Length: 279
Image 1 (spheres, rainbow, N blue to C red):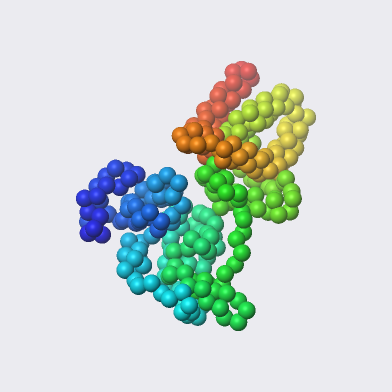
Image 2 (cartoon, rainbow, N blue to C red):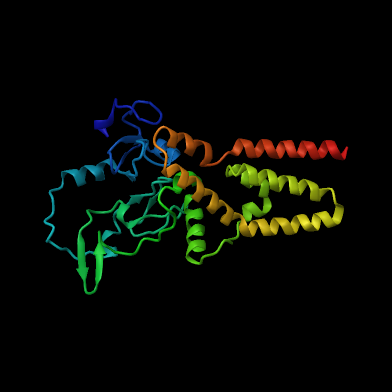
């Protein structure tokens, strides 16, 4: 920790002190406050895909001599149980062999796990990397899609993967079922959200029949919501892939992530409108 005292955290711009909990990026070795890393959901260096790393473990990796590429050591998952890795999304510790974060659901890639030095080992017909059996990538999302999802990346990556692998457009979403128009606006699908809200308003004026149709509509929307969101993310990612900086960053800020304020204000405005009409 002493080597970071007096240096500045790139996220909060505050200087590190002796008592600060400091982590570093596994790729660019940029130091951050651990809380700042978690709040930013990753390294602040633009374009860096490094994962959260303990400075002491990083130092041991840097100081350790290179291992002969032809020297193979048989390692098994149990051999690396004492090593801790950190989730790049929420910063919580996890077992190096885990495929998903138990706290936030973020999906890990074996190539990016913070384990011991990655040394190929062959045992029988199965190849081991860094003490764990090498497994195929899940391909949960196309490259770059996570920068437009931002919140609950692991959940939507798994949903997208299931729909793509099964060539489906349906996947149940409870939040979308209960809060259909507001969920759309929260996910920045403003046009769809406005359409759903307008339809809900019209049906609410039709009495019992309208209420039944409204419930049926919400059920249908809960079934197709993830498919609609996957198409939206795919479209935005395709556009973003053709842009250069600073246009790319502006496009992500405008069309990616979530908009809680707009969703809340829409809900308040709609409630006020219904109240005025029913007076």
